[in-house]
Amino acid sequence: MPSAKLLSDRPLVEFDDDGNRVLQRTLKVDLGQALSALHRWGKHADAITMSKTGTTVLTVREGFVYNGASFWLARAFLGRRELYEAAACLHDQLAQWVAPRGASDEVFRIVSCSGRGVKNWQARAAWIGLRLGGWVAWWGHRRRQRLKRKTV
Image (cartoon, rainbow, N blue to C red; front, side, top):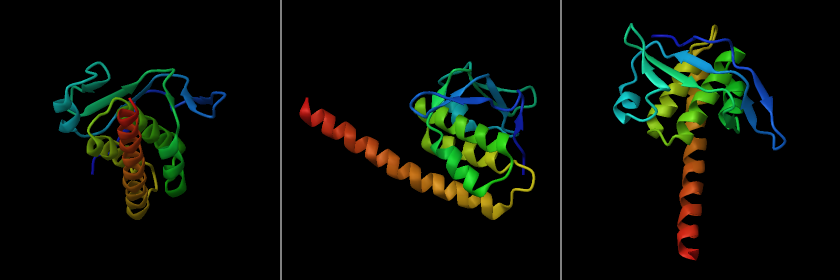
């Protein structure tokens, strides 16, 4: 199975006053495979690129603020810190851009299971937790949007 590689220094994160994570330097990750769903999606072409070898490269600019919920989930199951921090950051950036949900969850799975010593059950458990937690968050967001429309 292809393995994701950090193309930048490992993520450096600080916290803001609200407890959100703030990326302190640009993060660049080669997924080690082509993720056609993101290329077909066609948005954010400067941040979702193709390498010379035909693999997908994702870039998140410094200053990106994210809540890190997927970080805590990955940390519960996985090993290497810079990879699950990167997985969480990329997943949250794609979610903020409203990328196809399956594609952003697949990015999380690819990056998080690329860590040294990560066992298949660990990666699968983290991915299942992400899918279930993401489903709950997605339905909560949809419900808030419907309530907002009714009150307008």
